[in-house]
Image (tube, rainbow, N blue to C red; front, side, top):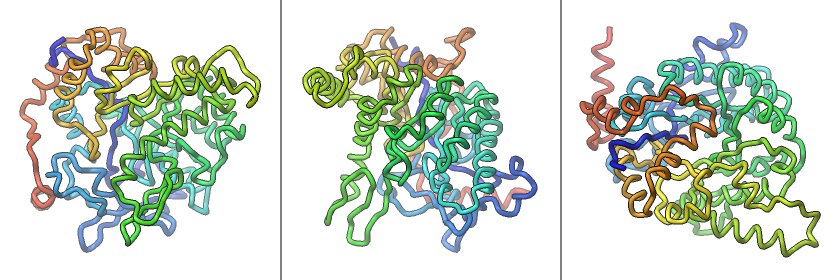
Amino acid sequence: MRTEDMILVSIDDHLIEPAGVFEHHIPESFRDRVPKMVRDDNGVDRWVFEGMEIGSPGLNAVASWPKEEWSLDPVGLAEMRPGCYDVDQRVRDMDAAGIWKSMCFPTMGGFSARAFSDSVDKSLTSAVISAYNDWHIDEWCGAHPDRFIPLAVMPLWDVDACVAEVKRVAAKGCRAITFPETPYALGLPSFQSGYWDPLFRTLCDEGVVLCLHIGLGISLVQRPGGGITGGAIPDFEGSEIDAFIVLASSVSTIALTDLIFGPTLRRFPDLRVALSEGGIGWIPFYLERADRHYRNQVWTGARENRLPSDLFRDQILACFITDPAGLKLRNEIGIDNIAWECDYPHSDSTWPTAAADVMAEFADAGCSDSDIDQIGWQNSCRFFGVDVADLDRNKVSVGALQKKGADVDTSLVSRNEWRERYELAAQSTP
């Protein structure tokens, strides 16, 4: 297969929320108390809500920045490529990269909006979460419904509220929720506790996928001395941010172990789980190790016919940005269980050369055309219930989309240059 003939669906991208997210979706009684975007004297934008200030680290919005400018320092919209926060410009950037569909995780409050759980007034926060989901589904995804897969955040402090919100967003066509991969690292009940079983039952009933994105079950706090703290990742004197970033994907291994060796997957055989941004190269060894343990260490508990590898292949979708070794081991993982992601506009993203990059990895691994289709788009569409009955390959292929986006400038642009363009545009707006 040629690069231009591929179809690409990215099931892990991110959006930077623009001001006005809640304007059209919050009940009148809460209108004056919703999160508000405030810009400080340094041009940094932060969401202010119930005594909390939530900013966006620079690594969350590096698309088109020179790598020397990347950092964890908070950043304002003015310094970002507009595709980070403007949905029309996002689609233009998707065209330029040859990406047909995208699922966008939130930035506000964390990848699962978990910061909202700290709010004291839960009635207000419930309204804010529902309003956020309505904005995401109706405005962000609704602006280009053929280009996005909706994703909802949950009221994490109450399983019954989660159940109600899943039913509500499912009725709007949303088939995915984002959730902490190790909830106990946040002080929430574990998957093994049984507390979340009503949620899992509802996800099965409604056909909604549980997305466990790396970084949801851990904290990222940079210490003055250079170390970092993270709930599921050990912190030690002298630990560096490099170690944290590299190890973050390893939490997917912990989450998978919680699911496989706890009761969740066996109790809910229709539950579908996506390990977002966890990579795939580690999976063959993990499944071999888990199966060997399951057969050998019978003293640890009752055994059923389904091995850990069976649970994985029946219920899990593993996702990668770039993973040459993993693609070479695709048959050991299960080709049905692998999906691709771009991670725009984060620092791990391969945008704008994503199509060429992943095709080089496909070719190096000896992937067939069928393998490329499954991994590039078919598995994602099947897993998330995307209707492809009327798909016209000639309209959604990498080549067709890149032709539409041929005029998009994907060259490196500094943060200062984006700010100058932003301010100039603001001055010319009536």
